[in-house]
Image (cartoon, rainbow, N blue to C red; front, side, top):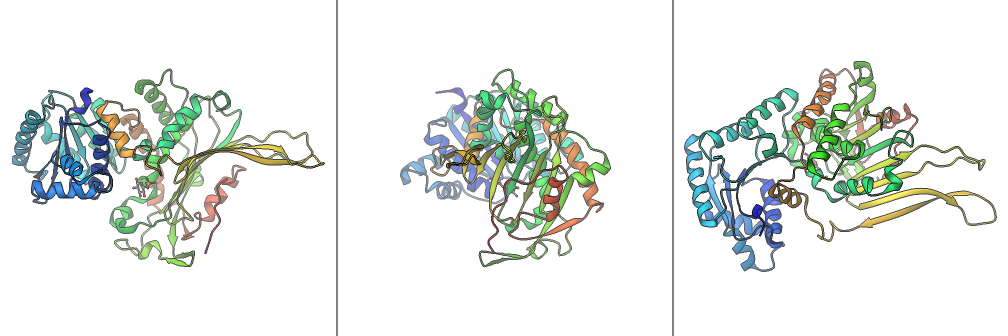
Length: 490
Ligand code: BG6
């Protein structure tokens, strides 16, 4: 057995939706694959006064479709303990310490501890502080902290939060979750880029014209209007997921495939993000908000009519723009992105558009495009030019496609399963380092500031489209156009 599977996991926010939907099933999958065995226990905490029996039933319910038998589900759930907890009450941490010690002895967990903060971020600092002051973090065994997003709402709050966490944990012990980094196809970018000579050698400004990142969602804000109206697409999807993905696409080749070398290269990209002038910023980043619309005969309401959303809200549900990375590899190459709610269909895609070749054929040649399908379909496709069958010589596009259904069939791990596995193995490759978070907020804050002062328009877009016209116009300014333009079905 490897040492990492001996651990007491404490989840703050155990009655929450994320715990139920993602954490318990992911822990169960790790249990089923033998990565967690008899030497582990989970302490769930939240305000509600639940009994151990009730907590076990919640856990069993959340994994019922994954378990081989009710006995297996029950055996797994017997490792779960509940403690009602008020994050501001010191007494509660003392009780938590007692439970932690007791479970450590019962399960022989060698004092290894994993803390998962899955609740409102304003409590993260208080919890971290008490974990130390009440001796739960005691320097025995490994002690690791997983922090859910959002990591601050701007540079100032993120720095403050980081300072608070650092009073108890070292950077190496803090694992900031970005669940996209747990997705198969995002991890596959390492293989695509660094295990293929044909890509590695052309992965630069001499050959690549532009890179397009799309995070499209079909859903609206659903029941999260309260949170979302305060956040908006830029904070919700760009500061974290988009820039993380961009860093994997833009980074230089790491000296080795280790967390240290990968991190070094990723951090470099964040630090090389070009900070445009105010005037450029206004042109380079655009925002939008959905209005009502119809898709396949079904009507979607407008963002401002969603529950818990201010009827005069100026919050963006769509953001699009062009980032630049000031590196020898990519100087001058736009990394376009767009992300939004209520778009035509759900899809996370990357299109790497190569430069146009000079043509000797008397006809224009379409540029090669490498597409990475991240979700819901997963795979790669490479468009190349061939000859159309026939007497005449006519260039015709051909595409090499590879599609995997690993996630759909359950063959690949869930993002959270993979990420918790990494934490148990002390592998921080697929987590956001503080330097990355810091650099991303410095740029995002400037855009937020400009938007909050309404220095640029908030473009409307019809639900079911791929966002406002301004996002299409933006690419025209760089002589480019969005490769992915799904058909709109009203
Ligand atoms: C989250 C955002 O981080 O990612 C949500 O807060 C968004 O607004 C979600 O819907 C998308 O994740 P996925 O894995 O469903 O693409």
